[in-house]
Length: 123
Image (tube, rainbow, N blue to C red; front, side, top):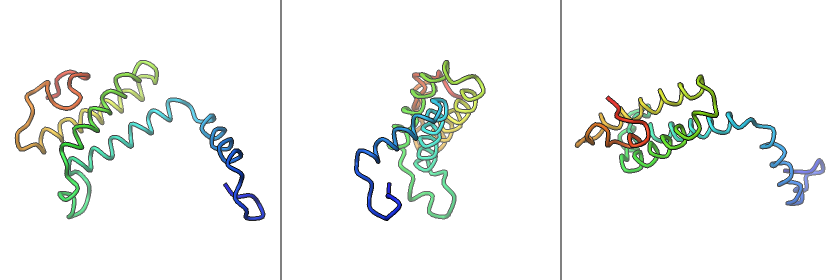
C-alpha cells in the first residue's frame, strides 16, 4: 500500500488494510476461488492447457496431489457452500479425475485414482 504522497504505508497499516479487504469476502467466495485455482493448476499438470506446449507442462505426479487436495476441499466444504456451488465444483473435480485417468499411461484402478478415496469411484 502506498500513501498519497508516494511513501510506502507503514507495515501495520498495510496489514490492517489487507485484513479489512479479506474480511469483506464471503467464505463461499474464498472457498470457490481456492478450488478454481486448484482446478486450473491440475488441468495444466494433466496436459490440458491450450497451445502446442501443453505436453511440456504435463506432470501427473503433481496433478495427483492437486486433485487430491481439491477433492478434500470440495468434500469438506460441500455441506456449507450450498448445492449450486458444490455441484459445479464436483463436476469440475470429476472431469479432472477422468482427464487424469485418460492421461495416465497406466491408469489407476477404478476407485483408486486421485481423490477417489473421498469422492467414490469415478467412471
